[in-house]
Length: 327
Image (cartoon, rainbow, N blue to C red; front, side):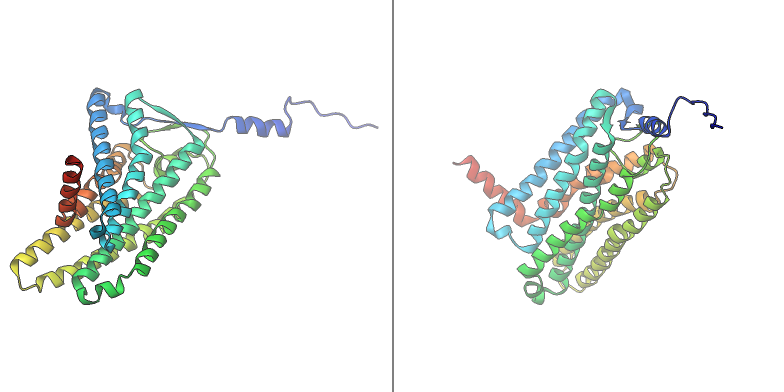
């Protein structure tokens, strides 16, 4: 007796998988600042001006350090790497932000979104590492001036710079790989101006607990530990400054260090509040404001605080302008 054939449901298991895959989200809509359409022109001009100022200011630092031998000391070499990191960080986000403001929203593929997140994560980590390296360099210069050149030799400089770049490029690899394995079933609207971690995780219909835990662990190593190191370095610097007999010398050194510390605290505290708990309820307006601080404003302030307030850099810049104008 032959088996009765089962009724044909119309789809095979393979067809079901294909149908499921076809419903997966493959692209997102970035909304940017869609809630402020009446300020569209003002926002575009503001961020365009800030972006140009950031690129020009940091490019000047890189050019001066490369062209003039008197600026090839460790501090300026570290500053030039920070300037390069700032240029790439803002270029990874701001031009796309301007396009979103101009058009109202922007379509971005899932792969492009992950790539943008990877470079953002790498360069934000690079900022943390380089700020830590600069604080260590300033600690040696202020607290151990007699041993500075011996400790901060060319070998250590290369080691610190290479380690910073390699570490920063490796930090977001695992989160990017895990993000690529997530499923997105819809909706596909990101209420942000770039592909940040929190809004992407909120759109996923997969279990995101692993990537949340990994992001928390990474934030401890990349953000919290460097921040504590920087704070401890500047506390030691402050103690040393207070022991300087000259009031003018104390004021000059303290003015420079306090400006450095202000930028560092703004950058690190903002990132810590954003990434200390990726599972927290996501507030788009709050996170946009925080992101503007460390993606747009900090890269603009870095050349002003770390370099353009520096007399040696200002004198070299004036020398370069004089040579250009009198050729």
